[in-house]
Length: 181
Image (cartoon, rainbow, N blue to C red; front, side):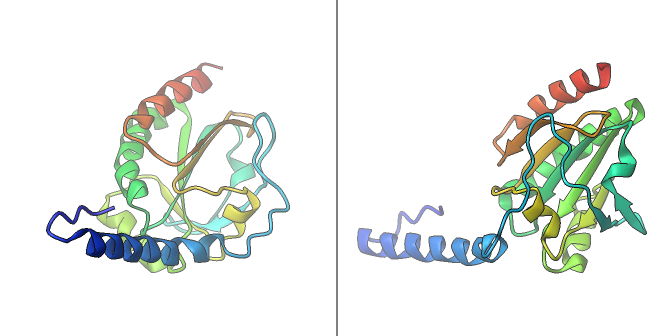
C-alpha cells in the first residue's frame, strides 16, 4: 500500500480503503465465478492445453514432453509479475540450451496489451495468451504470479504461488535438479 504521511489518520484510512478497493476490482474479475474441475498436483500430469503463442501459431503443452518446462502465469496488472519476469528471462537465457523451456501464460483479457508488455520487458521466451482464463482455471491457480515446474515426463514437480524477492534462486536450483534427472 502507498505511504501517505501527509494525510491525517482519517484520510490515510480512506486512501487505504480506496487502494484496497482498486486492487480488488482489478483482481476479482480474474477469480470471480471460477469453478475448478481439476487442479495441479505434485507428481501428476497437469491439464493439457493449447494456447496462441507470441512466437506464432499455437503451443500445446503435451508436445513439450522431453524438456523441463517452467510455466509462469502472469498479467500486466500484477506488480510482482512484472518484477519477476526479467528474472525469468535470465533463467531462459541460461538454461534453454540444457533442454529447459520457459512459458509465460498471460491471463490478461487483452492479448495485444500482454504482447506489448512482453515486448517492453524484452521477454525472450514464449508468451501464451489465456484471455478466456480456461487454463488458469483448470490449473486451479489462485495467486499471481504462479509458477509450476514440470519434469521431462510432463509431471508437476514444484508449485510456487506468488513472488517474493530471491525466489528466482529457488527456481534455478530446482531447474538444475530437474535437468540432471
